[in-house]
Image (tube, rainbow, N blue to C red; front, side):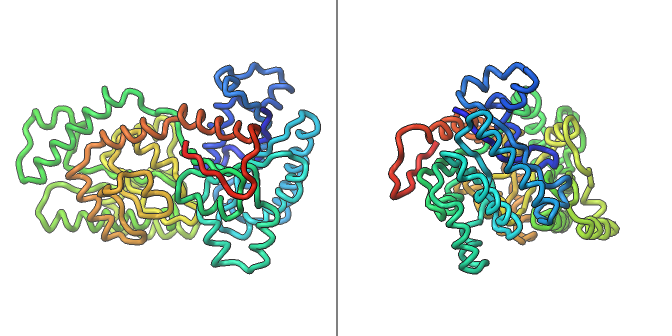
Length: 428
């Protein structure tokens, strides 16, 4: 099967572009590049029987530029559409893969242009819904003409792939012929979890429980903790945006420490903020907050980290905090990474996020609620060491499982025609 992948890969780096890169690599890479450069293909990807022809439809060079639409981007987008049509003619690619917009006007215009120019040239269209919230946004925030034009250009595609049950509403709004649920998945970043991370996590947890009970630690208690078990390392790893919860996380740690201080406990939370700021205004607000000595004691800025620095931060962390209410949040990669590292996680009851956790999970709080987040982290640090989180990752979010399910869903469009009158949901 030949598949035209109309989507961008890093940079800029964010969850969606990273997942596209993983998909391309896992399915054997860009066959267009291989044909030009005579590069050997990835046999593991070829085994999944999909040839990808990639149009790297990158419109933004930086995070700050994402979501802004102007004349230069429209010209770029037109060029990318011509590339897609050329691949259709030159290589006989008949299947078109595209990632639709979240609920945002500028992104919706991009979808209109791509569907208008490219869809007539391809036999089958596959939409992969990485963002959530478009259906509700179309019903509540735009004029009926905008809604009708969107339906006209994007309805009844051959397949919609969604990440979660919450996401179904976005796909079904446009009446696809098929819907498949395929969760995201990543390479296991710590296959040595049981040998290296879990013993450290358990030692720190045991020492912390003794401290919270008012007991003194012995040399044996301190031996395998990596030092300073009285400091609970809370990691925030995401773009530093208000809607991603960076300021709520800071306030929550401050409130949690005040509670611990009132209890005369030696334990304190230390928030490590890892990520790049998207706007200068939010960076300035962060720097202003950090002039407060209490905040400076509770928060440590790490900046953007990757590679070994990122791995080290995740291995050393005791908790993960991500109190997001970002508009398009769906199934963020950072939460999957936290699972893989076995981190007890505090996040919000927002969009698809609760589906990633057990129904009675103690780390789910309301959005825009630092007080609840503080209480949640105080509870998690007394209850969780991370084994269950690691088990959830291995059961549902590995890269091999993701690629196999994704390939099976994509290949389904060339099988027997589905019922045209309704969408067919298959859980993978």
